[in-house]
Structure formats: structure tokens, C-alpha cells
Length: 205
Ligand SMILES: Nc1ncnc2c1ncn2[C@@H]1O[C@H](COP(=O)(O)OP(=O)(O)OP(=O)(O)O)[C@@H](O)[C@H]1O
Ligand SMILES: [Mg+2]
Image (cartoon, rainbow, N blue to C red; front, side):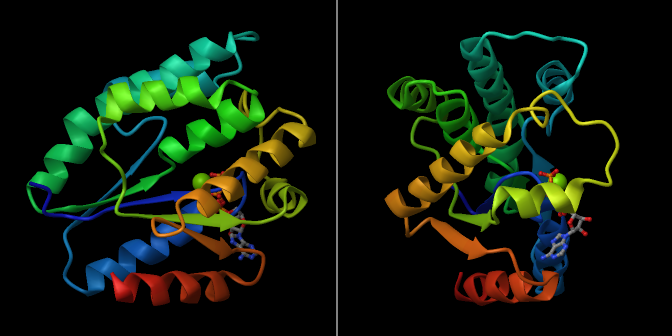
């Protein structure tokens, strides 16, 4: 039996995920909720190693299916050893990206067959889905402008604008497929405006 709530936050680069995670963390803590923060890829010791493989620039080519499998290997480790045990012990879990990102990046971005992603989702997740997902939506040019001052781009950040446009479209499509779970947030306005939209939804939960 799951006792805590599992919340995920997704969206293209620079949408404001990390910024809003801070906000959600402080909001839920102020309500006395026990909460852990985590991320994908990563979140576990093994997962952080897989993240280095996936995002590091030392590897200049990776087959798209391999990328997908590594994402799901990471996700398996993450849910089995961290997320589910935390939820069962009554903690809420807030993850910076989750399965929707595989559909957006490997499905939309890389063009992999969504049916194959769904097969892996079934195999690894076995019906486990977040209680709530915030999809922070910005046009990709705005997202890129927000992160421009950061240093080196990781392997996936070096993709083309067309790639990220497909990623964004896939995210939006998923929010339309699962409107009860995935809340599409207009993240183009101020940080406070985005936080307020998130807060309104969280108060309902
Ligand atoms: N609504 C906003 N308006 C203006 N600037 C913002 C807004 N939200 C976040 N920022 C700024 O944009 C930058 C990127 O935000 P943030 O790191 O939260 O994005 P992210 O989605 O986590 O990015 P990444 O995908 O690279 O992890 C930060 O400098 C942040 O302060
Ligand atoms: Mg971030």
C-alpha cells in the first residue's frame, strides 16, 4: 500500500523545474509533510553512474535503443530501491523528471516507436504511475535563453532545436492524453506566477 504521494515535474531544458522543485519542497515542508527530492536519470548511487553515461560528453555516439534501455534501467533502480520504499514509509517523493521524459525525449525527440516505450514501461513500472505530474511548458527558445549562461552543455542538451521542438510537442500530447494526472503549466511568466499555478493544484491534492 502506498501511503505517501508521488509527484513528478517535467518539461524541456530551462522550463524552471529545479526552481519550482525548491518551491514545492518548501511549501510541502511547511505543511508538515515528510518529503524526499530525487531525480532522473539518477537519484540512486547506481543511477548517478548511469546518468554520467547518458549525459556525459565522453561518449559521442549511443544507439537510441541503448539510451532508452539505460533510462529504464536507471528508472528500475530508482523506483525499486528509493521511490517505492520511501512512499511505503509514508514519505512523499518529488522527482525531477520521470517516465514522461522517456516518451518525450526518446519517443518524440529520437523518434523511437512509442509502443516499444510502452512495453518497457509496462515491464519496469508494472502500473506504477505518479499521483501528479507538473508539466512546465515554455517554448524552447525561452527555455534555452534561460539556461544560456550555464557552462558546458550535456550530451542531450547539444541536440538541435528541431529535436527539442519534438520533445515539447510530445510532452504536450501526453498531458492531453492524461489530463487528470499531468497538469500543463504555463511556465513562460514569472517564477512567482508559475509557483502560484502549482500551489493552487497542490492545495487540492
Ligand atoms: N519563470 C521564470 N522566469 C524567468 N526565469 C526563470 C523562471 N523560472 C526559472 N528561471 C530561471 O531560469 C533558469 C533555469 O531554471 P531551472 O534551472 O529551474 O530550469 P530547469 O527546468 O531545471 O532546467 P534544466 O532542464 O536544465 O534542469 C534559472 O536561472 C532560473 O532562475
Ligand atoms: Mg533543473
